[in-house]
Structures are given as structure tokens and as C-alpha cells.
Length: 124
Image (cartoon, rainbow, N blue to C red; front, side):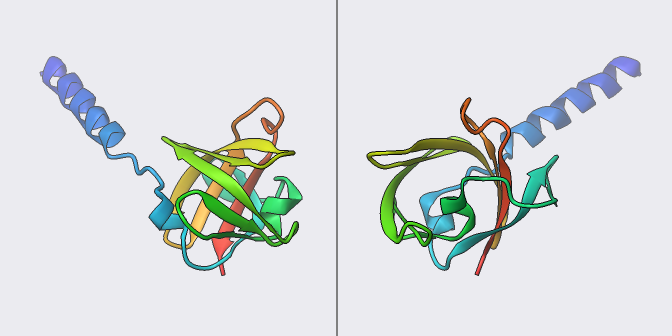
């Protein structure tokens, strides 16, 4: 009986892992994403702690272009699995991205430079 319970628990874990949601370019379009809090253990917490050009507002224009309200210019971005990277001639900043719902995402530092950063973004 114990073996059956362990097997069922293992199968449930496999199913849950297989159901993880990856963020797509289409998910991010429409509206401006603004940093409203930090992001810890899957929840908003404290003050936003990402680079200011992210916190002040991002508008995803298409599958590889994002507009930064702080810099008033376009950046390139790339989504790969659960990571988003913002790039221009002066920046290359990576964050792990968690899809919370249609209007909320969480970012946590994905590179050595951003490893202690996190922010909770809401679509406005």
C-alpha cells in the first residue's frame, strides 16, 4: 500500500511539473507593466528592487521590442523558457519571470549582476 501511495505522489509531481506556465511574447503585450512591489517566494513583498528602467514602466511592443518609459526608448528583449533578457548597446539584464495572471508577473535576478533583485509588475 505504501508503494502505491509513493507512486501516486510521484505521478502527481510529474504532472504538476509538466503543467508549468511559460510566458510568451503575446502574454506581455497590451498595456504598460509597472513595478509595484518586490517579489519573494512567489508573492509581492516590500519595495520593487529591479533596475529603475523596469520599475518605471515597460510596454512590450512586439515579439522582440520593449519600450522603457524611464529611458524613453526601445530595447530588445528575449524570452527563453522562464527567463527574460533586456538588451541594448549598454545593457544586458536577465531575470527569471513568473507568470502570475493576465495582469501580474514576478521578476527575480537571473544573472550575477541582478541576483539580489526582484520586482512584482502589474499591467496598467
